[in-house]
Length: 391
Image (cartoon, rainbow, N blue to C red; front, side, top):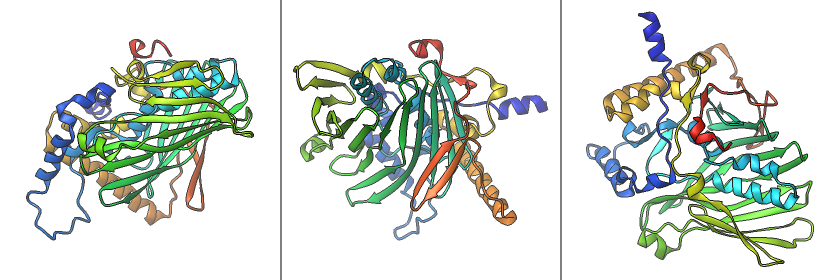
C-alpha cells in the first residue's frame, strides 16, 4: 500500500505543450479567457482589497513556467541548435544562431499563466543530443537558470531570466532581463544575446506578444546581428490581426558593413537577403519547427528528481486537465503552503538557500550565474524518437 502511494505521489504529469496551431483552439481565444476572468470577479465587492488575491487554477496553464522556459530550447522538430556548429563559415554559423534564436519564440495565451516555480524547483529533459536543466534559483525576485548542452556538436547554452513588469495603462510591459550565452566549443566562439520584451495589451483587442530588439554578437568573428520584433500598428490590433513581423540585419561589428537583411514573420517564415548578391534564402520556417509539438515522456521514473516541475505540480495539473477546479485549487494551495513553511524554517534557522545546479551572484540589480557542471547529464524525461529523430 505504501509503495502504491509512493508511486502515485511520484507520478509526473506532462501536459501537451502549446504549439503554433493551438492558437485557433476556442479554449484559448482572448474572448473566452476574458469571460473566465470576469466570472471570477462576479462575487467580489467594489472596493475590496485584492492584495492577497491568488490566481485561480482556471487561469493557469497545466505546467510550470520552468517547463515553458525549457521547452524553448529542447522542444523543436529540427535540431536547429546543433546546426549552429555544423556550418563551416562564420557567417553561416551566425545565420544559424539567428535561426535558432527565432525558433525560441513561441505563441502566448493572453490571460493564461503557467505556475510560478517554487524555490529549488527543477526541470530536466533530453531530446536527441540536447540535454537541458532548468532551476528556480531565487524566489524574490523570481530568477530562473537554464543550462543546455549538445553532446554531439559540443555546444553550451546558459540563460538567466528574471522579469520586471510595468503597468502602462492599456498594456503591461514585461522586460525580461538576464544573459543568454551560446558557446560553440568546436569553433571557440561565444555568442552573446539579450532577450525580447513581452507585451500584454488590453485594448483595442486583448493579446500577448513578443517585441523589442534582440542583439546577437560574436566577438571572435567580428560579426553581429540585430533582430527587431515589430509591434502591431493600431489598425492591425483593432482588426485582431497578428503581425509578428521581423526586420533585422547581419553586419560586421567593427565596420558596420551590412552583409544580410533579415525579414519575415516568426510564426510563418523568415528570410535572409545577401546584400552583395541579392540572393534570398529562407532561414526559418515556423510550421516545420514549432507545430505538432509533444511533451516529454518518462523514460526512468526512479531517476526523476523530487524537485521536478512535473511532480511538484502534478496534482494541480491533473485537476486542471480534468476541470476539477476544487481539486486543483486545494493542490495549488498545498504547494504554496509548503513553500511558505520551508521559507519560515530557513529564516528561523538562519539557513541560506543554495541552488543545486548553479552558482548565483547578484551584481547590483542584476543577477549572474554559472552552472556547477560542465555538461548537462542525460535526463529521465525525454522527447520520443518520433519527435526528436532529427536531433
